[in-house]
Length: 41
Length: 473
Image (tube, rainbow over all chains, first blue to last red; front, top):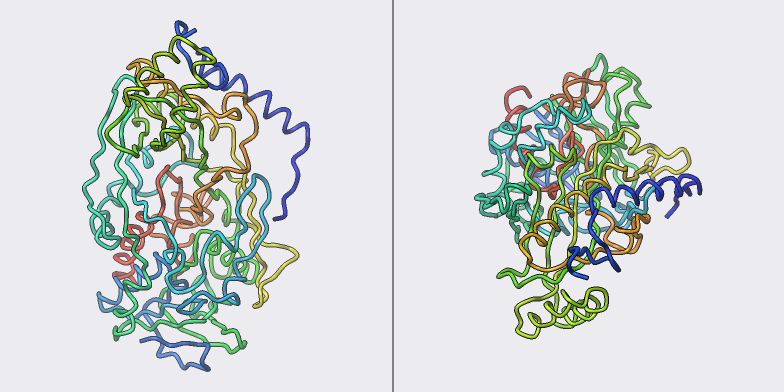
């Protein structure tokens, strides 16, 4: 399969943007991927 | 009647009322419906009755952007098309899909949901499923609903309709007849040129011509016609090949949940909640896993949250909780930059440039998946049903993994419907803008993709187009 590589800056920009997006939707406590209630731990 | 162009020259009994190029779900449905209505139909298939490399190679191409399947394995090029190998999942567009004008002109269909719904029962009969879909809202506040999928056996269209087509006095099926050119002028197609693998040519005259060559080749061949004929046959400047869409498919996590009574469940958000969150459609498939997965997840949860882990371990010991895999399949926003283009380097054996597929997921696509998952997670936590563990790439904001399912082999858009040639290629009757008699059929028509599998709607649209052509061709 022939693909054009994305530039490193584009990948970094996407990654930096996506973490806050996740926190926007999941303000919960997250440990090792588990979405927890505050009183779980 | 059946004519195999591989066996030598054919003299066609033209003119036909309609010439259909491509014999997959769309082309066969259209041909059979028109034939039954007394229309004379030429159904032209580039492949034969069975798979052959010489035909399949024409589906080769290149992909750019996000990881995607090789194009020659993502579809099938012989009689029956990709229905020769499909999963049978059936669920059509929803009213929500035709009600997204608030998101911009890119999202606006030129027809209503009811115009398509009118053909659902008949389409369900063709794919042999119960048309009664039992959806219900699980939680109004969170906008969560359980949705019903139906499973076709799956119906292989070539097997289902071959005898009828061969016996029909109105339908002529041409096998190994590859579309190579349109002949016409002044915005009207007069005939179609077809070629076999020995480079013999056949010309078929028809009052109307329909491209039904699939969700990639409809764009490829129409782009080729644009390059060959300029504005002679249809408007120039149409966004041919653009707004191509897929359904991203990824496993987003696993969960420990108090046991449900079904092994597989499908969830989606209500129209109201999608609109509130500003997202598109996303189907969450929840699949039960085995005891070993339950033990593994309990052990992991005990490590990070001993309190709730002990609760889960207790329920697991009583067989009251088990593990589920969460898989999401969702709607991509129509994006003009996602497109089928013509290769400037590679051509098929008939000299037509091969496909280039430029496809990438956008931020809103990620947001649709995350927001839908959060609503589902909120329901699990509020009802204290269990706990969800997301995959690393989801919660760490990494790139999508390239070792997952990736997508659904659902090729949509490219010759999309629109209310204006600025945003689409065909009008509400599936006719190419500026043409008097050139039409498109199949999922390349889709203005938006919804989150559901495309085949049932392909059949609905083909039935609808048959009704239109029955009046005008």
